[in-house]
Structure formats: structure tokens, C-alpha cells
Amino acid sequence: MSAYMIVYSKISDPDRFGAYAKAVLPLIEIHGGHILGRSSPPYVLEGDWPWQGAMIFEYPTIEDAKNFWLSPQYAEVKKLREGAAEFQVILVKSFG
Image (cartoon, rainbow, N blue to C red; front, side):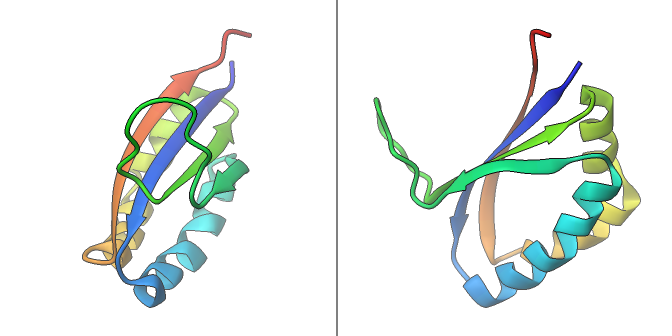
């Protein structure tokens, strides 16, 4: 059953964040993930929106998404965005 990682972001240092983005995308792919969509800023239909951007990634299973997030490799890559961006990240299972 597929899982979706939804990432909300505020980027304060685009150059440093670019290094993170370049390093993280291959790691996401190694864990079976791929990007479904992104928007900066997204079109807000209702409510207050404190974030600058949103991205949606699909993984084969929720376990694959968790394995990516909890991997030692991602722990190292995640350091690249410290002080460069603020994230809120959630996982959602598909119904299928």
C-alpha cells in the first residue's frame, strides 16, 4: 500500500537549502520514493498558511518512507538544511 510524505517548508537560506535538495533526492529514490508534486507557494483554498512551499513524495509503503526518514544516511543529509529551512513533515497511507 503506497504512502505519501507531505512536506511543508519555509526556506531562509536558498543556497544552503540547494545543497540539501541536491543530496536528498538520490537518497529518496534509493528508498523507492519519487516526487509527485511541489508548489511554492501552494494555492491555499482555506485557512491560514504559514509555509512557503509544499511537496508530496510517494513511496511504495509506509515502511519505505519511514526507512528513508530514519536512515543514518538521511540523518547526515538532514544536517545540510539546519538553519536553512524549517519543515513540517507528515506521512499518509493510501486507501488502496
